[in-house]
Length: 434
Image 1 (tube, rainbow, N blue to C red):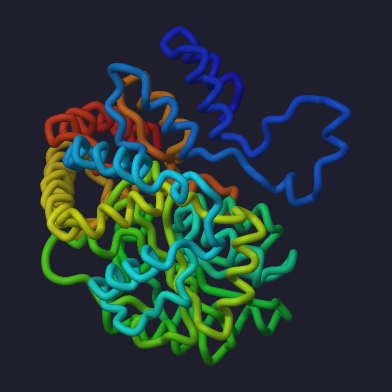
Image 2: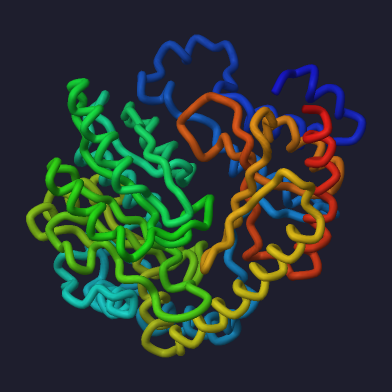
Protein backbone atom coordinates (compact mmCIF):
# COMPACT_ATOMS: atom_id res chain seq x y z
CA UNK A 1 0.00 0.00 0.00
CA UNK A 2 1.44 3.37 -1.00
CA UNK A 3 1.50 6.64 0.90
CA UNK A 4 -0.69 8.08 -1.87
CA UNK A 5 -3.34 5.46 -1.18
CA UNK A 6 -3.26 6.26 2.51
CA UNK A 7 -3.43 10.01 1.96
CA UNK A 8 -6.50 9.58 -0.23
CA UNK A 9 -8.44 8.42 2.80
CA UNK A 10 -7.18 11.07 5.19
CA UNK A 11 -10.52 12.84 5.34
CA UNK A 12 -12.35 9.70 6.43
CA UNK A 13 -9.75 8.20 8.77
CA UNK A 14 -8.15 9.56 11.93
CA UNK A 15 -4.38 10.00 11.85
CA UNK A 16 -3.74 7.09 14.19
CA UNK A 17 -5.66 4.73 11.92
CA UNK A 18 -3.72 5.83 8.84
CA UNK A 19 -0.44 5.39 10.70
CA UNK A 20 -1.42 1.93 11.93
CA UNK A 21 -2.47 0.76 8.46
CA UNK A 22 0.81 2.04 7.06
CA UNK A 23 2.77 0.12 9.67
CA UNK A 24 0.66 -2.97 9.02
CA UNK A 25 1.34 -2.76 5.30
CA UNK A 26 5.08 -2.22 5.45
CA UNK A 27 7.85 -4.32 6.94
CA UNK A 28 9.97 -1.30 7.88
CA UNK A 29 8.96 1.72 9.91
CA UNK A 30 12.26 3.21 10.89
CA UNK A 31 13.56 6.65 11.78
CA UNK A 32 17.05 7.81 10.90
CA UNK A 33 19.15 7.76 14.08
CA UNK A 34 22.77 6.79 14.78
CA UNK A 35 21.60 4.12 17.22
CA UNK A 36 20.20 2.16 14.29
CA UNK A 37 23.75 1.11 13.51
CA UNK A 38 23.69 -0.81 16.80
CA UNK A 39 20.81 -3.07 15.82
CA UNK A 40 21.62 -6.75 15.48
CA UNK A 41 20.86 -8.59 12.26
CA UNK A 42 18.20 -10.44 14.22
CA UNK A 43 16.47 -7.19 15.19
CA UNK A 44 16.35 -6.12 11.56
CA UNK A 45 14.20 -9.17 10.83
CA UNK A 46 11.53 -8.26 13.38
CA UNK A 47 8.47 -6.92 11.58
CA UNK A 48 5.55 -4.88 12.76
CA UNK A 49 2.57 -7.12 13.46
CA UNK A 50 -0.29 -6.42 11.08
CA UNK A 51 -2.66 -8.18 13.44
CA UNK A 52 -1.67 -5.98 16.37
CA UNK A 53 -1.98 -2.78 14.36
CA UNK A 54 -5.39 -3.66 12.98
CA UNK A 55 -6.48 -4.79 16.44
CA UNK A 56 -5.60 -1.30 17.71
CA UNK A 57 -7.66 0.30 14.93
CA UNK A 58 -10.62 -1.95 15.74
CA UNK A 59 -11.01 -0.35 19.17
CA UNK A 60 -12.38 2.80 17.51
CA UNK A 61 -16.09 3.28 18.38
CA UNK A 62 -18.50 2.53 15.56
CA UNK A 63 -16.38 -0.07 13.82
CA UNK A 64 -17.43 -3.70 13.67
CA UNK A 65 -14.22 -5.62 14.32
CA UNK A 66 -13.97 -8.96 12.57
CA UNK A 67 -10.21 -8.76 13.08
CA UNK A 68 -9.06 -9.82 16.53
CA UNK A 69 -9.32 -13.45 17.63
CA UNK A 70 -10.23 -12.63 21.22
CA UNK A 71 -12.19 -14.96 23.50
CA UNK A 72 -15.56 -13.86 24.85
CA UNK A 73 -14.75 -13.29 28.53
CA UNK A 74 -18.16 -11.94 29.54
CA UNK A 75 -19.29 -15.46 30.37
CA UNK A 76 -16.62 -15.93 33.05
CA UNK A 77 -17.63 -15.80 36.76
CA UNK A 78 -15.72 -12.54 37.29
CA UNK A 79 -16.94 -11.82 40.85
CA UNK A 80 -15.94 -15.27 42.04
CA UNK A 81 -12.58 -14.97 40.31
CA UNK A 82 -12.02 -11.62 41.99
CA UNK A 83 -12.71 -13.21 45.35
CA UNK A 84 -10.32 -16.06 44.54
CA UNK A 85 -7.55 -13.61 43.61
CA UNK A 86 -8.12 -11.63 46.81
CA UNK A 87 -8.02 -14.81 48.87
CA UNK A 88 -4.76 -15.93 47.26
CA UNK A 89 -3.07 -12.62 48.07
CA UNK A 90 -4.52 -12.41 51.59
CA UNK A 91 -3.72 -15.99 52.58
CA UNK A 92 -0.78 -16.95 50.36
CA UNK A 93 0.57 -13.59 49.33
CA UNK A 94 4.15 -14.24 50.41
CA UNK A 95 4.22 -17.14 47.96
CA UNK A 96 2.07 -15.63 45.24
CA UNK A 97 4.10 -12.41 45.03
CA UNK A 98 7.52 -14.01 45.36
CA UNK A 99 9.84 -15.56 42.77
CA UNK A 100 8.83 -19.09 41.86
CA UNK A 101 10.33 -22.10 40.17
CA UNK A 102 11.45 -21.68 36.60
CA UNK A 103 9.45 -24.68 35.38
CA UNK A 104 6.22 -23.51 37.01
CA UNK A 105 4.35 -24.71 40.08
CA UNK A 106 3.98 -28.45 40.48
CA UNK A 107 0.27 -28.03 41.22
CA UNK A 108 -0.43 -26.32 37.92
CA UNK A 109 1.76 -28.69 35.93
CA UNK A 110 -0.18 -31.60 37.41
CA UNK A 111 -3.48 -29.92 36.54
CA UNK A 112 -2.27 -29.24 33.00
CA UNK A 113 -1.77 -32.98 32.58
CA UNK A 114 -5.46 -33.36 33.45
CA UNK A 115 -6.40 -30.72 30.87
CA UNK A 116 -4.36 -32.54 28.23
CA UNK A 117 -6.06 -35.81 29.18
CA UNK A 118 -9.36 -34.16 28.19
CA UNK A 119 -7.74 -33.50 24.81
CA UNK A 120 -6.59 -37.11 24.40
CA UNK A 121 -3.03 -37.07 25.79
CA UNK A 122 -3.13 -39.68 28.54
CA UNK A 123 0.55 -40.27 29.36
CA UNK A 124 1.75 -36.75 30.22
CA UNK A 125 3.65 -36.29 33.49
CA UNK A 126 4.28 -32.99 35.33
CA UNK A 127 8.08 -33.39 35.04
CA UNK A 128 7.88 -32.89 31.28
CA UNK A 129 5.62 -29.82 31.40
CA UNK A 130 7.19 -26.36 31.24
CA UNK A 131 4.96 -23.37 32.06
CA UNK A 132 5.44 -20.50 29.59
CA UNK A 133 4.13 -16.98 29.01
CA UNK A 134 1.43 -18.23 26.66
CA UNK A 135 2.12 -20.56 23.75
CA UNK A 136 3.82 -17.63 21.96
CA UNK A 137 6.67 -17.93 24.46
CA UNK A 138 6.73 -21.70 23.97
CA UNK A 139 7.28 -21.18 20.23
CA UNK A 140 10.07 -18.71 20.93
CA UNK A 141 11.87 -21.10 23.25
CA UNK A 142 11.61 -23.97 20.77
CA UNK A 143 13.06 -21.84 17.99
CA UNK A 144 15.87 -20.64 20.23
CA UNK A 145 16.73 -24.19 21.31
CA UNK A 146 16.66 -25.87 17.91
CA UNK A 147 17.35 -23.28 15.20
CA UNK A 148 20.51 -21.62 13.98
CA UNK A 149 20.31 -18.74 11.49
CA UNK A 150 19.58 -20.20 8.07
CA UNK A 151 17.89 -23.36 9.35
CA UNK A 152 14.50 -24.21 7.89
CA UNK A 153 11.15 -24.44 9.67
CA UNK A 154 8.16 -25.93 7.85
CA UNK A 155 4.73 -24.33 8.30
CA UNK A 156 1.26 -24.69 6.91
CA UNK A 157 0.18 -22.13 4.35
CA UNK A 158 -1.40 -20.04 5.84
CA UNK A 159 -0.19 -20.02 9.44
CA UNK A 160 -0.20 -18.00 12.65
CA UNK A 161 1.37 -14.57 12.23
CA UNK A 162 2.93 -14.67 15.73
CA UNK A 163 4.89 -17.79 14.81
CA UNK A 164 6.11 -16.17 11.59
CA UNK A 165 7.32 -13.17 13.60
CA UNK A 166 9.23 -15.49 15.93
CA UNK A 167 10.89 -17.38 13.09
CA UNK A 168 11.87 -14.16 11.33
CA UNK A 169 13.44 -12.80 14.51
CA UNK A 170 15.66 -15.88 14.79
CA UNK A 171 16.72 -15.56 11.12
CA UNK A 172 15.08 -18.86 10.24
CA UNK A 173 14.02 -19.71 6.70
CA UNK A 174 10.30 -20.50 6.60
CA UNK A 175 9.13 -23.04 4.01
CA UNK A 176 5.41 -23.45 3.45
CA UNK A 177 3.39 -26.58 2.77
CA UNK A 178 -0.05 -26.24 1.22
CA UNK A 179 -3.30 -27.35 2.79
CA UNK A 180 -6.61 -28.48 1.36
CA UNK A 181 -9.96 -28.77 3.10
CA UNK A 182 -8.56 -31.63 5.21
CA UNK A 183 -5.48 -29.74 6.36
CA UNK A 184 -1.82 -30.29 5.63
CA UNK A 185 -1.37 -32.56 2.61
CA UNK A 186 1.04 -35.39 3.52
CA UNK A 187 2.24 -35.94 -0.05
CA UNK A 188 3.10 -32.26 -0.40
CA UNK A 189 4.88 -32.31 2.96
CA UNK A 190 6.97 -35.29 1.87
CA UNK A 191 7.83 -33.65 -1.45
CA UNK A 192 8.74 -30.36 0.23
CA UNK A 193 11.08 -32.09 2.66
CA UNK A 194 12.77 -34.04 -0.14
CA UNK A 195 13.29 -30.89 -2.22
CA UNK A 196 14.75 -28.95 0.69
CA UNK A 197 17.07 -31.76 1.69
CA UNK A 198 18.25 -32.16 -1.89
CA UNK A 199 19.08 -28.45 -1.82
CA UNK A 200 21.22 -29.01 1.26
CA UNK A 201 18.84 -27.33 3.71
CA UNK A 202 18.76 -28.20 7.41
CA UNK A 203 15.12 -28.65 8.48
CA UNK A 204 14.53 -28.52 12.23
CA UNK A 205 10.80 -28.80 12.81
CA UNK A 206 7.30 -28.62 11.39
CA UNK A 207 5.15 -26.01 13.12
CA UNK A 208 1.50 -26.98 12.82
CA UNK A 209 -1.88 -25.87 14.19
CA UNK A 210 -3.87 -29.04 13.46
CA UNK A 211 -7.17 -27.95 15.02
CA UNK A 212 -9.06 -24.96 13.57
CA UNK A 213 -5.92 -23.43 12.11
CA UNK A 214 -5.32 -19.75 12.67
CA UNK A 215 -6.18 -18.12 10.26
CA UNK A 216 -7.98 -20.62 8.04
CA UNK A 217 -10.14 -22.51 10.52
CA UNK A 218 -9.16 -25.77 8.78
CA UNK A 219 -8.65 -28.97 10.80
CA UNK A 220 -6.13 -31.67 9.95
CA UNK A 221 -8.12 -34.82 9.20
CA UNK A 222 -7.74 -37.65 11.68
CA UNK A 223 -6.53 -40.11 9.05
CA UNK A 224 -3.68 -37.78 8.07
CA UNK A 225 -2.31 -37.11 11.54
CA UNK A 226 -0.09 -40.12 12.07
CA UNK A 227 1.12 -39.93 8.48
CA UNK A 228 2.35 -36.37 9.06
CA UNK A 229 4.29 -37.41 12.17
CA UNK A 230 5.74 -40.47 10.42
CA UNK A 231 6.99 -38.37 7.50
CA UNK A 232 8.73 -35.99 9.90
CA UNK A 233 10.16 -38.77 12.04
CA UNK A 234 11.65 -40.50 9.00
CA UNK A 235 13.39 -37.23 8.07
CA UNK A 236 14.54 -36.55 11.68
CA UNK A 237 12.32 -33.48 11.91
CA UNK A 238 10.52 -32.58 15.14
CA UNK A 239 6.83 -31.67 15.17
CA UNK A 240 5.84 -28.52 17.06
CA UNK A 241 2.09 -28.91 17.68
CA UNK A 242 0.25 -25.72 18.67
CA UNK A 243 -3.22 -26.53 19.97
CA UNK A 244 -4.89 -23.55 21.69
CA UNK A 245 -8.29 -24.26 20.12
CA UNK A 246 -8.50 -28.06 20.38
CA UNK A 247 -11.11 -28.16 23.16
CA UNK A 248 -13.29 -25.64 21.32
CA UNK A 249 -14.80 -28.11 18.86
CA UNK A 250 -18.47 -27.26 18.48
CA UNK A 251 -19.77 -30.84 18.33
CA UNK A 252 -18.37 -34.19 19.42
CA UNK A 253 -15.06 -34.93 21.09
CA UNK A 254 -11.71 -33.36 20.19
CA UNK A 255 -9.59 -35.13 17.61
CA UNK A 256 -6.62 -36.92 19.11
CA UNK A 257 -3.56 -34.64 19.13
CA UNK A 258 -0.48 -35.60 17.13
CA UNK A 259 1.36 -35.86 20.46
CA UNK A 260 -1.00 -38.52 21.86
CA UNK A 261 0.65 -41.50 20.15
CA UNK A 262 4.04 -39.87 19.55
CA UNK A 263 5.59 -38.80 22.87
CA UNK A 264 9.17 -38.78 21.56
CA UNK A 265 8.57 -36.85 18.34
CA UNK A 266 6.18 -34.00 19.20
CA UNK A 267 6.54 -30.90 21.35
CA UNK A 268 2.98 -30.05 22.33
CA UNK A 269 2.02 -26.46 23.15
CA UNK A 270 -1.15 -25.47 24.97
CA UNK A 271 -2.58 -22.28 26.40
CA UNK A 272 -5.20 -21.00 28.81
CA UNK A 273 -5.71 -17.96 26.59
CA UNK A 274 -8.64 -19.47 24.70
CA UNK A 275 -10.12 -21.78 27.33
CA UNK A 276 -9.81 -19.36 30.28
CA UNK A 277 -8.30 -15.87 29.92
CA UNK A 278 -5.50 -14.52 27.69
CA UNK A 279 -4.52 -11.69 30.03
CA UNK A 280 -2.98 -14.15 32.48
CA UNK A 281 -0.38 -15.12 29.84
CA UNK A 282 -0.12 -18.74 31.01
CA UNK A 283 0.65 -21.48 28.51
CA UNK A 284 2.76 -24.60 28.50
CA UNK A 285 4.91 -26.96 26.53
CA UNK A 286 4.83 -30.73 26.96
CA UNK A 287 8.35 -31.67 25.93
CA UNK A 288 9.74 -35.13 25.13
CA UNK A 289 11.70 -36.37 28.12
CA UNK A 290 15.03 -36.44 26.26
CA UNK A 291 14.61 -32.77 25.29
CA UNK A 292 13.02 -31.41 28.45
CA UNK A 293 16.13 -30.25 30.32
CA UNK A 294 17.54 -28.10 27.53
CA UNK A 295 14.12 -26.68 26.73
CA UNK A 296 13.43 -25.82 30.38
CA UNK A 297 16.80 -24.10 30.82
CA UNK A 298 16.22 -21.98 27.72
CA UNK A 299 12.78 -20.96 28.99
CA UNK A 300 14.15 -20.06 32.42
CA UNK A 301 16.87 -17.91 30.86
CA UNK A 302 14.18 -15.68 29.32
CA UNK A 303 11.47 -15.36 31.97
CA UNK A 304 13.38 -16.56 35.07
CA UNK A 305 10.04 -17.86 36.33
CA UNK A 306 6.43 -17.68 35.13
CA UNK A 307 4.26 -15.37 37.30
CA UNK A 308 3.35 -17.23 40.47
CA UNK A 309 0.19 -15.26 41.23
CA UNK A 310 -1.20 -15.93 37.76
CA UNK A 311 -0.38 -19.63 38.05
CA UNK A 312 -2.08 -19.84 41.43
CA UNK A 313 -5.19 -18.14 40.04
CA UNK A 314 -5.32 -20.61 37.15
CA UNK A 315 -4.90 -23.47 39.64
CA UNK A 316 -7.75 -22.12 41.76
CA UNK A 317 -9.93 -21.85 38.67
CA UNK A 318 -9.19 -25.44 37.66
CA UNK A 319 -9.75 -26.86 41.15
CA UNK A 320 -12.66 -24.75 42.39
CA UNK A 321 -14.69 -24.03 39.26
CA UNK A 322 -16.43 -26.10 36.63
CA UNK A 323 -13.83 -25.38 33.96
CA UNK A 324 -15.14 -28.11 31.68
CA UNK A 325 -18.60 -26.59 31.95
CA UNK A 326 -17.14 -23.20 31.06
CA UNK A 327 -15.58 -24.74 27.94
CA UNK A 328 -19.01 -26.11 27.02
CA UNK A 329 -20.36 -22.57 27.39
CA UNK A 330 -17.61 -21.26 25.15
CA UNK A 331 -18.32 -23.96 22.58
CA UNK A 332 -21.96 -23.01 22.44
CA UNK A 333 -21.20 -19.30 22.13
CA UNK A 334 -18.64 -19.76 19.37
CA UNK A 335 -20.80 -22.26 17.48
CA UNK A 336 -23.65 -19.72 17.44
CA UNK A 337 -21.33 -16.98 16.18
CA UNK A 338 -19.75 -19.20 13.56
CA UNK A 339 -23.23 -20.07 12.29
CA UNK A 340 -24.07 -16.35 12.14
CA UNK A 341 -20.87 -15.64 10.22
CA UNK A 342 -21.45 -18.38 7.65
CA UNK A 343 -25.08 -17.33 7.19
CA UNK A 344 -24.04 -13.70 6.65
CA UNK A 345 -21.40 -14.72 4.13
CA UNK A 346 -24.00 -16.76 2.26
CA UNK A 347 -26.35 -13.78 2.22
CA UNK A 348 -24.01 -10.93 1.34
CA UNK A 349 -20.80 -12.11 -0.30
CA UNK A 350 -20.47 -11.44 -4.04
CA UNK A 351 -20.21 -14.26 -6.55
CA UNK A 352 -16.63 -15.43 -6.98
CA UNK A 353 -15.77 -15.51 -3.30
CA UNK A 354 -15.47 -18.64 -1.19
CA UNK A 355 -14.75 -19.39 2.48
CA UNK A 356 -13.98 -22.17 4.92
CA UNK A 357 -16.55 -23.74 7.27
CA UNK A 358 -14.73 -24.40 10.56
CA UNK A 359 -15.85 -27.05 13.03
CA UNK A 360 -14.41 -25.09 15.96
CA UNK A 361 -12.17 -22.21 16.91
CA UNK A 362 -12.47 -18.53 16.04
CA UNK A 363 -11.87 -17.92 12.34
CA UNK A 364 -13.22 -18.06 8.78
CA UNK A 365 -10.85 -17.70 5.80
CA UNK A 366 -12.25 -15.91 2.77
CA UNK A 367 -10.78 -16.32 -0.73
CA UNK A 368 -11.33 -13.76 -3.47
CA UNK A 369 -10.55 -14.28 -7.17
CA UNK A 370 -6.92 -14.17 -8.28
CA UNK A 371 -5.76 -10.65 -8.94
CA UNK A 372 -7.41 -9.07 -5.89
CA UNK A 373 -5.02 -7.76 -3.21
CA UNK A 374 -6.83 -7.56 0.13
CA UNK A 375 -4.36 -5.16 1.79
CA UNK A 376 -5.55 -2.04 -0.06
CA UNK A 377 -9.12 -3.10 0.72
CA UNK A 378 -8.48 -2.71 4.45
CA UNK A 379 -8.65 1.08 4.33
CA UNK A 380 -11.87 0.98 2.30
CA UNK A 381 -13.35 -1.50 4.76
CA UNK A 382 -12.55 0.79 7.69
CA UNK A 383 -14.25 3.66 5.85
CA UNK A 384 -17.26 1.34 5.52
CA UNK A 385 -17.15 0.61 9.25
CA UNK A 386 -15.66 -2.88 9.43
CA UNK A 387 -12.19 -4.32 10.10
CA UNK A 388 -10.57 -7.58 8.93
CA UNK A 389 -7.04 -8.98 8.69
CA UNK A 390 -5.52 -9.17 5.18
CA UNK A 391 -4.27 -12.60 4.19
CA UNK A 392 -0.70 -11.48 3.51
CA UNK A 393 -0.11 -11.30 7.27
CA UNK A 394 -0.27 -15.10 7.51
CA UNK A 395 2.39 -16.10 5.00
CA UNK A 396 6.14 -15.47 4.76
CA UNK A 397 5.74 -14.43 1.14
CA UNK A 398 5.90 -10.75 0.21
CA UNK A 399 3.46 -11.32 -2.65
CA UNK A 400 -0.06 -9.84 -2.60
CA UNK A 401 -2.76 -12.11 -1.17
CA UNK A 402 -6.34 -12.57 -2.32
CA UNK A 403 -7.29 -13.92 1.13
CA UNK A 404 -8.60 -12.36 4.32
CA UNK A 405 -9.37 -13.56 7.84
CA UNK A 406 -12.63 -12.90 9.64
CA UNK A 407 -12.85 -13.53 13.39
CA UNK A 408 -16.24 -14.07 15.01
CA UNK A 409 -15.37 -15.13 18.57
CA UNK A 410 -15.82 -11.80 20.36
CA UNK A 411 -18.67 -10.38 18.24
CA UNK A 412 -22.41 -10.86 18.89
CA UNK A 413 -24.35 -12.48 16.02
CA UNK A 414 -26.18 -9.28 15.02
CA UNK A 415 -22.91 -7.37 14.82
CA UNK A 416 -21.34 -10.18 12.78
CA UNK A 417 -24.13 -9.88 10.23
CA UNK A 418 -23.77 -6.10 10.10
CA UNK A 419 -19.99 -6.35 9.70
CA UNK A 420 -20.29 -8.73 6.76
CA UNK A 421 -22.98 -6.52 5.23
CA UNK A 422 -20.59 -3.56 5.41
CA UNK A 423 -17.70 -5.56 3.98
CA UNK A 424 -19.56 -7.00 1.00
CA UNK A 425 -19.70 -3.80 -1.14
CA UNK A 426 -15.97 -3.27 -0.64
CA UNK A 427 -15.27 -6.73 -2.02
CA UNK A 428 -17.85 -6.37 -4.77
CA UNK A 429 -16.16 -3.17 -5.95
CA UNK A 430 -12.75 -4.90 -5.98
CA UNK A 431 -14.12 -7.77 -8.07
CA UNK A 432 -15.76 -5.37 -10.52
CA UNK A 433 -12.39 -3.69 -11.09
CA UNK A 434 -10.72 -6.92 -12.29
